[in-house]
Image 1 (tube, rainbow, N blue to C red):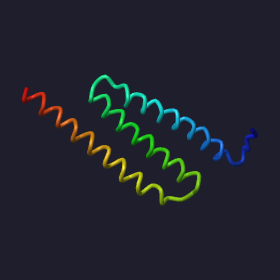
Image 2: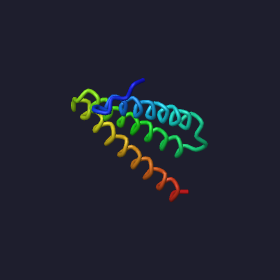
Image 3: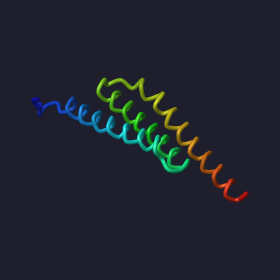
Image 4: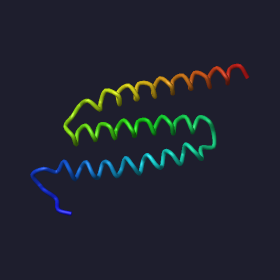
Length: 96
């Protein structure tokens, strides 16, 4: 593989994609093997953020911003879902 010094973007995209794919599989493993429900929710949240980061890398590689809108919506929904789950756990702990 040759590395073009004038345009390092293709190399950076390949490295970032490889790292995100590895992170995605680690998150899926944690999602399947998490010892508690909270661990699984955090793993699902992180899996969503890795997918959002992949959309960002693809948008950068293709120089197209249209993939960022669904990624932004997914990130917002993942955040709201995690907050809702945290509130659920808090109420469950208070109730007994």
